[in-house]
Image (tube, rainbow, N blue to C red; front, side, top):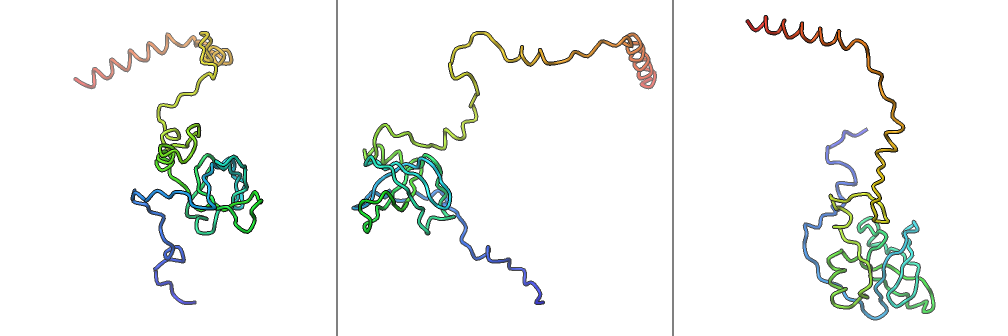
Length: 178
């Protein structure tokens, strides 16, 4: 068996997914293309999409984007409608927009104003607090319910002995200091 040369395996040759925060040019739709929002990931490179022309379609992630661009629910994408299947409800995902690009599309009125965009700020808010959805605080506290299930430890009668032990240790420490 040949000796390993220390260069690594096939992953060494694979390109790294580094973007270096380079601003890329905003891609607008062309003929036979449409903007869409991902409703649900189905698996196998497919997802349910709501196209902004009002049609719900089944989208397939094209080969160039597979394992390079991760598409999740709520993302804004550019889809290519299939020319050879005009009445089909199938399309191919051609491009994924980042959050800032989606905001620009909304500002340019390319996508509807009422579209909810996924932003990184919503996902990584460090001040997120869980609470009631109703928003009203009746003064009820969950701490009371938790406290009801707790068992109290009985007080031991050895407390007098503990006090004596502490006094002896203090006196020993003071003698050692001298």
